[in-house]
Length: 227
Image (cartoon, rainbow, N blue to C red):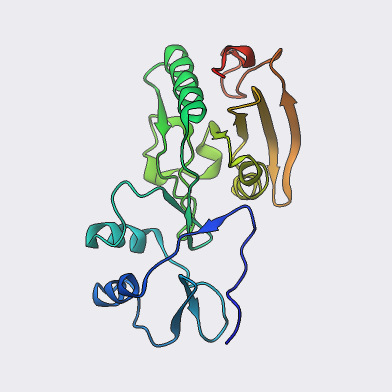
Protein backbone atom coordinates (compact mmCIF):
# COMPACT_ATOMS: atom_id res chain seq x y z
CA UNK A 1 0.00 0.00 0.00
CA UNK A 2 1.33 3.41 -0.92
CA UNK A 3 1.80 6.21 1.60
CA UNK A 4 -0.78 9.01 1.55
CA UNK A 5 -0.01 11.82 -0.88
CA UNK A 6 1.72 14.76 0.73
CA UNK A 7 0.39 18.31 0.88
CA UNK A 8 2.31 21.41 2.00
CA UNK A 9 3.10 21.08 5.73
CA UNK A 10 1.43 24.44 6.41
CA UNK A 11 -1.97 22.95 5.46
CA UNK A 12 -3.93 20.38 7.48
CA UNK A 13 -6.24 18.11 5.44
CA UNK A 14 -9.70 17.38 6.79
CA UNK A 15 -9.98 13.72 7.77
CA UNK A 16 -13.04 11.59 7.06
CA UNK A 17 -14.41 8.42 8.60
CA UNK A 18 -15.46 5.34 6.64
CA UNK A 19 -19.13 6.12 7.42
CA UNK A 20 -18.70 9.63 6.00
CA UNK A 21 -17.12 8.20 2.87
CA UNK A 22 -20.06 5.83 2.40
CA UNK A 23 -22.52 8.68 3.02
CA UNK A 24 -20.82 10.61 0.22
CA UNK A 25 -21.22 7.63 -2.10
CA UNK A 26 -24.91 7.27 -1.19
CA UNK A 27 -25.48 11.00 -1.69
CA UNK A 28 -23.88 10.86 -5.13
CA UNK A 29 -21.01 13.12 -4.10
CA UNK A 30 -18.40 10.46 -4.78
CA UNK A 31 -18.66 8.55 -8.04
CA UNK A 32 -18.57 5.27 -6.13
CA UNK A 33 -15.90 3.81 -3.93
CA UNK A 34 -14.28 1.92 -6.83
CA UNK A 35 -11.01 3.68 -7.49
CA UNK A 36 -11.11 5.62 -4.22
CA UNK A 37 -9.71 4.47 -0.90
CA UNK A 38 -9.64 5.91 2.59
CA UNK A 39 -6.09 6.08 3.98
CA UNK A 40 -5.50 7.69 7.36
CA UNK A 41 -8.71 9.68 6.96
CA UNK A 42 -7.92 10.99 3.46
CA UNK A 43 -9.73 10.04 0.28
CA UNK A 44 -7.10 8.99 -2.26
CA UNK A 45 -7.28 7.81 -5.86
CA UNK A 46 -6.02 4.22 -6.15
CA UNK A 47 -4.51 4.83 -9.56
CA UNK A 48 -2.35 7.79 -8.62
CA UNK A 49 -2.22 7.92 -4.80
CA UNK A 50 -3.32 11.54 -5.10
CA UNK A 51 -6.19 13.08 -3.10
CA UNK A 52 -9.65 13.00 -4.59
CA UNK A 53 -10.29 16.54 -5.81
CA UNK A 54 -13.59 18.00 -4.65
CA UNK A 55 -15.48 20.86 -6.27
CA UNK A 56 -17.16 23.64 -4.32
CA UNK A 57 -20.51 22.20 -5.37
CA UNK A 58 -19.61 18.85 -3.82
CA UNK A 59 -18.59 20.53 -0.57
CA UNK A 60 -21.94 22.31 -0.47
CA UNK A 61 -23.64 18.94 -1.06
CA UNK A 62 -21.77 17.57 1.96
CA UNK A 63 -23.22 20.34 4.10
CA UNK A 64 -26.73 19.71 2.74
CA UNK A 65 -26.35 15.98 3.46
CA UNK A 66 -25.09 16.60 7.00
CA UNK A 67 -21.66 15.10 6.30
CA UNK A 68 -20.10 18.46 7.14
CA UNK A 69 -21.77 20.76 9.68
CA UNK A 70 -22.86 24.18 8.43
CA UNK A 71 -20.35 25.85 10.73
CA UNK A 72 -17.45 23.58 9.79
CA UNK A 73 -14.19 25.57 9.72
CA UNK A 74 -12.89 24.21 6.43
CA UNK A 75 -11.84 25.63 3.09
CA UNK A 76 -11.17 24.17 -0.33
CA UNK A 77 -7.56 24.43 -1.54
CA UNK A 78 -6.61 22.82 -4.87
CA UNK A 79 -9.55 20.44 -4.57
CA UNK A 80 -8.73 19.19 -1.07
CA UNK A 81 -10.76 20.09 2.00
CA UNK A 82 -8.47 21.78 4.51
CA UNK A 83 -9.12 22.40 8.20
CA UNK A 84 -8.84 26.02 9.28
CA UNK A 85 -7.00 26.88 12.47
CA UNK A 86 -9.24 27.42 15.53
CA UNK A 87 -9.79 31.01 16.59
CA UNK A 88 -8.57 32.31 19.91
CA UNK A 89 -9.21 35.62 21.68
CA UNK A 90 -6.36 37.67 20.08
CA UNK A 91 -7.43 36.46 16.65
CA UNK A 92 -11.07 37.44 17.20
CA UNK A 93 -10.25 40.83 18.74
CA UNK A 94 -7.88 41.76 15.92
CA UNK A 95 -10.35 40.66 13.25
CA UNK A 96 -13.21 42.67 14.72
CA UNK A 97 -11.04 45.75 15.24
CA UNK A 98 -9.98 45.59 11.59
CA UNK A 99 -13.59 45.16 10.49
CA UNK A 100 -14.66 48.14 12.60
CA UNK A 101 -11.92 50.33 11.11
CA UNK A 102 -12.82 49.31 7.57
CA UNK A 103 -16.58 49.70 8.09
CA UNK A 104 -16.16 53.18 9.55
CA UNK A 105 -14.17 54.34 6.52
CA UNK A 106 -15.89 52.66 3.57
CA UNK A 107 -19.29 53.46 2.13
CA UNK A 108 -21.98 51.09 0.88
CA UNK A 109 -20.44 50.86 -2.57
CA UNK A 110 -18.07 48.29 -1.07
CA UNK A 111 -18.76 44.97 0.63
CA UNK A 112 -16.66 43.76 3.56
CA UNK A 113 -16.85 39.97 3.80
CA UNK A 114 -15.94 38.22 7.08
CA UNK A 115 -14.98 34.56 6.64
CA UNK A 116 -16.89 34.46 3.37
CA UNK A 117 -16.21 31.82 0.76
CA UNK A 118 -14.04 33.15 -2.05
CA UNK A 119 -14.53 30.84 -5.04
CA UNK A 120 -11.41 31.44 -7.12
CA UNK A 121 -11.75 28.30 -9.24
CA UNK A 122 -13.82 25.14 -9.31
CA UNK A 123 -11.70 23.38 -6.69
CA UNK A 124 -10.32 26.42 -4.89
CA UNK A 125 -12.49 28.24 -2.34
CA UNK A 126 -10.63 29.64 0.67
CA UNK A 127 -12.43 31.45 3.47
CA UNK A 128 -10.29 34.50 4.31
CA UNK A 129 -10.86 36.34 7.57
CA UNK A 130 -11.72 39.54 5.67
CA UNK A 131 -11.92 40.54 2.04
CA UNK A 132 -13.38 43.59 0.30
CA UNK A 133 -14.94 43.95 -3.12
CA UNK A 134 -17.15 46.35 -5.02
CA UNK A 135 -20.87 46.08 -4.27
CA UNK A 136 -21.43 46.01 -8.02
CA UNK A 137 -19.97 42.48 -8.05
CA UNK A 138 -21.66 39.43 -6.53
CA UNK A 139 -19.33 37.43 -4.33
CA UNK A 140 -19.83 34.29 -6.45
CA UNK A 141 -18.65 36.14 -9.56
CA UNK A 142 -15.39 37.53 -8.20
CA UNK A 143 -11.99 36.94 -9.72
CA UNK A 144 -8.80 37.48 -7.75
CA UNK A 145 -8.31 40.88 -9.38
CA UNK A 146 -11.76 41.96 -8.12
CA UNK A 147 -10.68 41.55 -4.50
CA UNK A 148 -9.55 45.01 -3.41
CA UNK A 149 -8.02 43.89 -0.10
CA UNK A 150 -7.70 40.47 1.51
CA UNK A 151 -6.67 40.03 5.15
CA UNK A 152 -5.76 36.89 7.07
CA UNK A 153 -5.44 37.32 10.84
CA UNK A 154 -2.75 34.93 12.01
CA UNK A 155 -1.85 33.36 15.33
CA UNK A 156 -0.94 29.67 15.12
CA UNK A 157 -1.61 29.86 11.37
CA UNK A 158 1.03 32.47 10.57
CA UNK A 159 3.33 30.15 8.61
CA UNK A 160 0.42 28.86 6.56
CA UNK A 161 -0.73 32.42 5.82
CA UNK A 162 2.76 33.62 4.88
CA UNK A 163 3.58 30.59 2.72
CA UNK A 164 0.78 28.45 1.29
CA UNK A 165 -1.89 31.15 1.38
CA UNK A 166 0.43 33.83 -0.04
CA UNK A 167 1.35 31.54 -2.94
CA UNK A 168 -2.33 30.78 -3.58
CA UNK A 169 -3.49 34.39 -3.51
CA UNK A 170 -0.59 35.53 -5.70
CA UNK A 171 -1.43 32.82 -8.23
CA UNK A 172 -4.95 34.22 -8.58
CA UNK A 173 -3.84 37.84 -8.82
CA UNK A 174 -5.14 39.27 -5.55
CA UNK A 175 -3.40 42.66 -5.58
CA UNK A 176 -3.23 43.52 -1.88
CA UNK A 177 -2.85 40.75 0.72
CA UNK A 178 -2.19 41.43 4.40
CA UNK A 179 -1.22 38.94 7.10
CA UNK A 180 -1.95 40.47 10.49
CA UNK A 181 0.06 38.96 13.34
CA UNK A 182 -2.44 38.83 16.19
CA UNK A 183 0.31 38.37 18.79
CA UNK A 184 3.22 40.39 17.49
CA UNK A 185 1.35 43.49 16.31
CA UNK A 186 2.79 43.30 12.81
CA UNK A 187 1.26 43.43 9.35
CA UNK A 188 2.97 41.63 6.49
CA UNK A 189 1.88 43.37 3.28
CA UNK A 190 2.02 41.46 -0.03
CA UNK A 191 1.68 43.21 -3.39
CA UNK A 192 2.52 42.74 -7.09
CA UNK A 193 1.13 39.19 -7.46
CA UNK A 194 2.50 36.78 -10.02
CA UNK A 195 2.70 33.04 -10.74
CA UNK A 196 5.80 32.73 -8.55
CA UNK A 197 4.45 34.70 -5.59
CA UNK A 198 4.30 38.35 -4.60
CA UNK A 199 6.96 40.66 -5.97
CA UNK A 200 6.68 43.10 -3.08
CA UNK A 201 6.49 42.00 0.56
CA UNK A 202 7.17 44.23 3.52
CA UNK A 203 6.52 44.24 7.25
CA UNK A 204 4.80 47.10 9.07
CA UNK A 205 5.76 46.91 12.74
CA UNK A 206 3.88 48.27 15.74
CA UNK A 207 5.14 51.84 15.18
CA UNK A 208 4.01 51.91 11.54
CA UNK A 209 0.80 52.55 9.64
CA UNK A 210 -0.33 51.06 6.36
CA UNK A 211 -3.02 51.93 3.80
CA UNK A 212 -4.73 49.63 1.29
CA UNK A 213 -3.82 50.16 -2.35
CA UNK A 214 -7.48 50.68 -3.23
CA UNK A 215 -8.13 53.08 -0.33
CA UNK A 216 -5.01 55.21 0.21
CA UNK A 217 -6.83 57.63 2.53
CA UNK A 218 -7.69 54.79 4.92
CA UNK A 219 -4.91 54.41 7.49
CA UNK A 220 -4.49 51.35 9.71
CA UNK A 221 -2.15 52.01 12.62
CA UNK A 222 -0.54 48.79 13.77
CA UNK A 223 -0.33 50.07 17.35
CA UNK A 224 -4.13 50.30 17.46
CA UNK A 225 -4.56 46.57 16.96
CA UNK A 226 -5.56 44.74 20.16
CA UNK A 227 -2.89 42.61 21.77
